Amino acid sequence: MDNRLISRFKEFYTLETFQVAFYNAQVNSATDEYYRRAFEKMVQIEQGHADYFANEIDKANEEVPSLVGSFFQLAGSLLGESIESMGQHNTCKLGVALENEAIKKYHSLIKECTDRHYLMFKNTLMEYLLDEEFHTLWLRDYMNHHPN
Image (cartoon, rainbow, N blue to C red; front, top):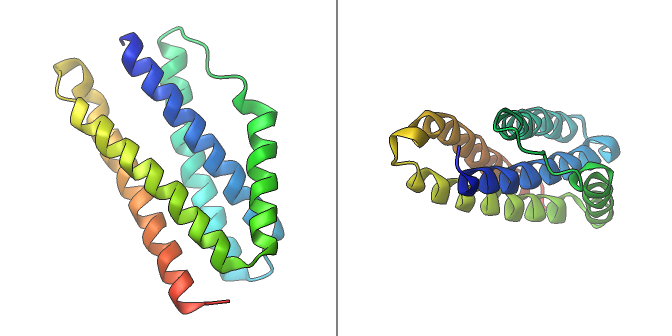
């Protein structure tokens, strides 16, 4: 794996880990069972994404970003708790923004996966893109049906 792809995977690892921390904050503070279960599912999926990128970075004998650790989780958690106190609608709006950033990055990287060496990553990236798009749809739908 070349340095450019490793660098991109580190970006994805960072973004996915932030999403996990943000969504975990919603799980921990939610009083609505349906809302909490949806965020539990998103945490599970996003954690799988983060683990995949961490594994690929590790297989390339590179170091998985360590600043993501407790600092990033704390930032995601604080942001998540702050937004949650402003209501589920605002939480979903920020979730959509995070998902849109991920979607944009996945589209970009998938377009770059034309080299035979990168094709092995393309299917996984498309699966993860679909996950991000489904999360966005759920968040938007929840906002439309549960306005503050």
